[in-house]
Image 1 (cartoon, rainbow, N blue to C red):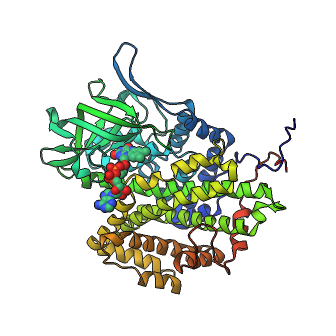
Image 2 (image 1 turned 90 degrees about the vertical axis):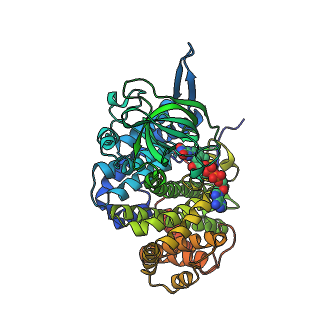
Image 3 (image 1 turned 180 degrees about the vertical axis):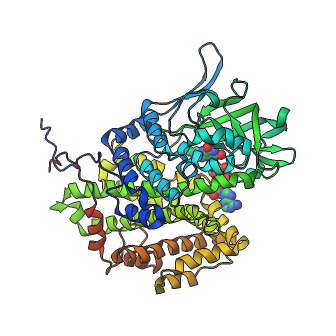
Length: 538
Ligand SMILES: Cc1cc2nc3c(=O)[nH]c(=O)nc-3n(C[C@H](O)[C@H](O)[C@H](O)COP(=O)(O)OP(=O)(O)OC[C@H]3O[C@@H](n4cnc5c(N)ncnc54)[C@H](O)[C@@H]3O)c2cc1C
């Protein structure tokens, strides 16, 4: 028997996720958060450490378990997690990813936080769901002064406290969101959960939510039908008298990906809740949260693509076939370079969008976030599949990171507004808020580039619903190309424009046209490849 292992890549673990990502470092500095680079480097080291990477694997291998009742038959409605989950959550909370821009407002704070969220997602996507919802909930909590006073100090705390106790007995709090019902997801107006006015300004909620992720959060923003229409409520897991709220977990979803995170079906049986915003204005109220979680969908997808590309480069560098390393095979170089372009464009756009939140640039963010959410989330799935294939059969094996990335990849495009819903939202923003389109087009045109001008000229601003995806795609490519031309390396910008804008491209990654400087794109990618110490055995 021969146990000698030849021609296999060493495990890719234990590297600094920030220090090895030039595109992200430059974007962070450019978009106003250069001051955060030391902290990001520190976090990138921790999140990319072999130990933390192991947590990511374990949290998915040992998914959460629902305990509906105790052994005596009393309701528990609790979810138990593997310690690795708590380790990841602690790391994220201690670095303030759930609230830092609100707790410590300063120029660039949303960009710095976006970069932290990206690094955390590169390690493990599931735990960033509760972190993201908590971050996004703050502007909604602030719409009710009494609720904000009670809840935000705990949301701002960087002490992770997973105890299932009334929030007044806890050192920190996490917030979830429950909008989706069986009969109506995107169409939230079809919600049937009822809210009856109860004593002292509170309401009793009765109904069912079909998806409620992170159900061990301390409170949830919930939509329900009140006497004056669909309204937004804060529903805590515990009532002010210290008793458990009537928030009953029915089951956990058996999900294709995002397995570390619990997503539940939940029933409210007269659950105690407080109104946020005006009765009847629930959608407008909760959209403030959705706007922020959509930003995080872009960040999460950029993170997933980055991780997938690094895995593919790493494998190709160490694996030899037909006489040379895969990374030296011309066709593999085209595939890798094409994916590196996609990943770079996603990262650049994610950080640019985050800056709009720092600057309170609502007109730009209104349209650009919808555009970015549609496009960047959509690109994750095909890229994950192609990156997986770069590892050949090894990529199909669970111990590699690739199946996890592949299963996770479609999710950001589904939640917080699925593809069509986002594309229709792009049309709505264009028709209802002309200033938003003006701002986005002005930004695109900053590049002063003929290729980009041709793209813009072709955008059908009054498209019918059936043409919405074309409009969203073009705006997204325009924003990405503009960033590439202004701030990217020349080879990246030219290859991006030739393939994505000028149409000199096939239907799969790896079909960049002749004339693209693939060597320059590859050199940039290879220069920052993580060095792992274990011998490759080649
Ligand atoms: C893992 C996971 C976790 C989740 N966690 C939460 C959570 O914590 N809280 C929560 O509230 N929700 C949660 N969701 C629900 C999620 O937000 C919804 O699934 C999503 O918004 C889509 O709604 P839906 O499933 O009802 O699909 P539908 O609304 O039925 O849409 C189905 C398809 O039709 C398309 N479509 C819809 N309307 C139109 C139209 N007018 N024209 C053309 N196409 C259209 C959509 O784009 C989609 O592709 C979660 C979902 C998943 C998968």
